[in-house]
Image 1 (tube, rainbow, N blue to C red):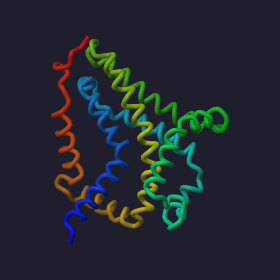
Image 2: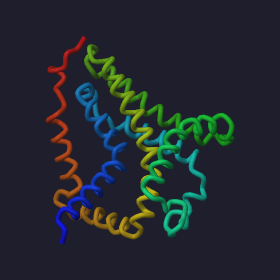
Image 3: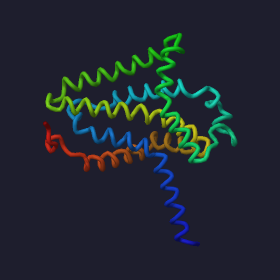
Image 4: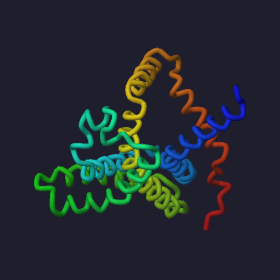
Length: 221
């Protein structure tokens, strides 16, 4: 066995995984970097939920029903049977055009006002979160809090738009292995003490906290 060849193949695979996961990592890092300015204002869950809701609306507006069909997702030669460069090119096109298409749909294609109702709910959640944060947080950090919220919300919308095609493409590439992984995760959540997923998330959170400065250590204007 050629050890260097194996190492090279492994490095290439890790690079591909990192390239595909980069937008989602940026989302996580954005939330982590803004954490010092929201520690006293509650969790960021409402902001994440609102951004995901907007991203889902954009995906529904831009992805036709044909690309969501079972054959398009699962079959070899289907719509999602793409190489990595093809997928990245398509995903970036979706991310770039999703919000303009959503705005156009709101203006011309939302006769039943489904999109308006969904987006109104999302922004209501976000505004409640920001109002609570401004009231509960120290006045000196209000501007930084708003910037952190805006960055987290914006990155969350685009990460959600990217995650939709990524999920469908991954199902096509991994096929039934995706369902096996899902079954293992469900079993771990049911019987793990605590679940492996939660332990892993806790480790990641602890590592992030080491590199995030405390609010007292930040030079404030």
